[in-house]
Length: 459
Ligand code: GDP
Ligand code: ZN
Image (cartoon, rainbow, N blue to C red; front, side):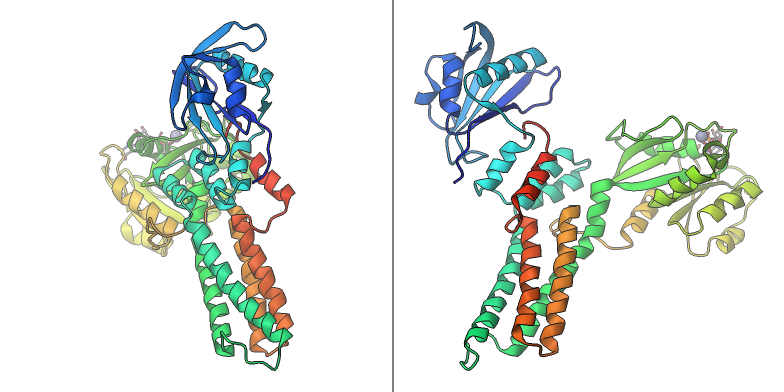
């Protein structure tokens, strides 16, 4: 186990709340809190997983700060595997800050962002993929996104990666033994078996990589832009979707006065709706934002909802917009079906031979279910993701898998071409190393520091 000093930080959100928690971890955690804790018994004489009621005093002045409940978790049965004391107090900023300061005065050091989780990692309680799952759980936007993260925290991805590494390491051991003793019959694998194992691992890595497409959807949400000429019903559509779906995030950075982004939860899929609501109904997207910005906005979108007004014949403006979104994944929303139709189905199918066309009436609230289904179908391209499948959501993991795949493919080529074994082992080793980056077995310290620096304070 690594030797560490004792760290402390506020672990709950800052702001008015009923309760707040300050977490202290390290060899000296119990001693340090005992210096400022006043209760019936000292923490030193308290059993693990027991809570003690009392109050915390200011280390310097000796003045009472707040009533607290201290929860004790003795090494190794704590989150960090070190001795941990969680001091629960009233949630306001003043008691939290004052107690934290008193703990620091009594001998602890202020924790860096992510340092608790980093210790859990360095002390071997969790691997890197699991540590990263913790950030993901904290920041997840939908239940489904959180389920995937919890699965990763439980070690789903880690086990898979570690299995693949083990297979490759066995092959490596065999090949290297064969290098040292070329004449001997090496027990274990035949040549054919080695080729087969490498191919198996390659196809497993490919399978994992395929899930990262879905992973990206859960990580970043689907950027969906609603376009159409003025008065076709864009705002009505946006409001209908927002009304029915729980909005998860109200303000997202990047929201400007021209363009508003709203997050909705579409059966677990975070949908980032990009609304041009800042544009008055008499103005048009291109006119207001300029051609460049409109194009940029459209380019960045994963999905376009094109709204048309069926009660009016298509105008030049409609065609101009249709032209702009030619190459985008588009769903055509034919709105105002409660009114007399001036566009017929045949004409629409000619203009949109490959696009899904959904007929809606915002006034009568019709067609929304069909629209939602159409969105989900287009997002997943018909691929159904089961909950217990391992899904790669982390960009860093995706990169590592891509690198591993490249090395393994090279190893496979050399092996098939009957190249000397050390040509094969070089690339196999690289593959093992790339896979190990995911769980953190083969990463340098500075990269690990960088990963944990992205955590928030107190985690
Ligand atoms: P936007 O300019 O594209 O955002 O269009 P709005 O959503 O502001 O709607 C323009 C007008 O059309 C409003 O008066 C809406 O009430 C009306 N409208 C929207 N959807 C429908 C619909 O399905 N049927 C009818 N009859 N009117 C609609
Ligand atoms: Zn509008």
